[in-house]
Structures are given as C-alpha cells and as structure tokens.
Length: 194
Image (cartoon, rainbow, N blue to C red; front, side, top):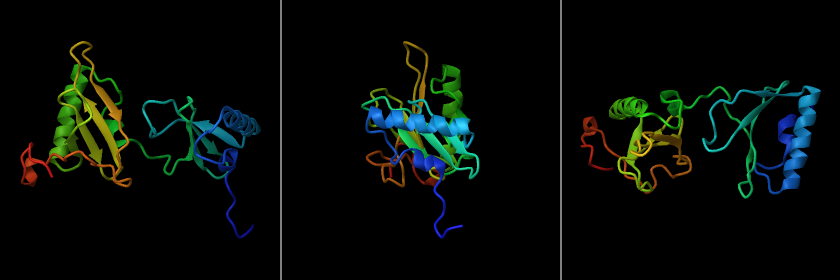
C-alpha cells in the first residue's frame, strides 16, 4: 500500500464536475459503461436530489462504497459529475411533501406543517422577492442547509409548486436580499423582519 490514498474509479471517469463539450460527455459515458460492464461500479437509487429540475443518476464503486451523482448535460447547461458526501442523507423538505406539484389539500397540509415548524424555530422563512405570485414563501432548514420555495395554488390549475432553490448559508446566499420573518414566540410579529 502506498503513502497516498487510492483515487476512486469514479473520480477518474471525468476530471471536472461539468461537461464542457459533447466529446467530453461521450468519452465519460464510454468509461462509465465499461466500469459498469466490468462490475466495478453499480447504479444505485438516488437519495437527496441536487436539483428538482433535472434527471439524476447515482453510481457506487463496489470496493470503496464511494458514490457519485450524474446529471446529464442539456447544453448549454453543463450537467454534473460529483462526489456525494453523504449518500444516506435524505432531503428534509422532500420528506414533508414528496411532490413538486401539491394539490390544494396537500398545499394546505404542507403550509400548516411549515408554519408549525417555523414557530418552533426548526425552519426559517422569508417572503419571496422574486415571485410575482402573492403568498410565495422561501423556507430554509439550517442543519441540512436546504432551501425550498412554496408557491400557493394557482386558480387556473389548482396546483401549488414546491421546489428546491439554491440558497445556502455556506455560500452566503441565505437569506441574501430576503428578510427573515420572525416568529411571535421570539419577540416578533409575523410582519417584523430581522
């Protein structure tokens, strides 16, 4: 055994996290197919999604247990090939509602649960400044650094929208320009902002 740790097979399949060209993508796909055929790598169920807007696949190296996510590019979007830090982690917010298009009933239940968790201090929230739909809220769960946006049901369809947004305390974008809503139990009213 050498002094340096062995690089995973998955890390060697593609040098970056994005695909810069169709040629890079085709070479990556050939390498991945070869490792799957050899049995060194297996496709596994996806855990916590990176994004709700793109399809995603997860692959595990059998020997090391290392897991990578693959989001195919849709050029000019460059896709993603990246290590999954904790494959067992599940989305905090997806566990509250497993669909991105809640019905009116699902929306009412989700909104009530989020209100309860906000009042308990389990989640933070802020009114959305980017939505043109009144009553849209952005919710953040600090332990998972996960942020979702909840749009109320549209009169035309009756469907609400529940989606992940890329705001992060680590990246400094939560809350960003948003103003946190302060729960009454913490000395504020619902309209007072931090």
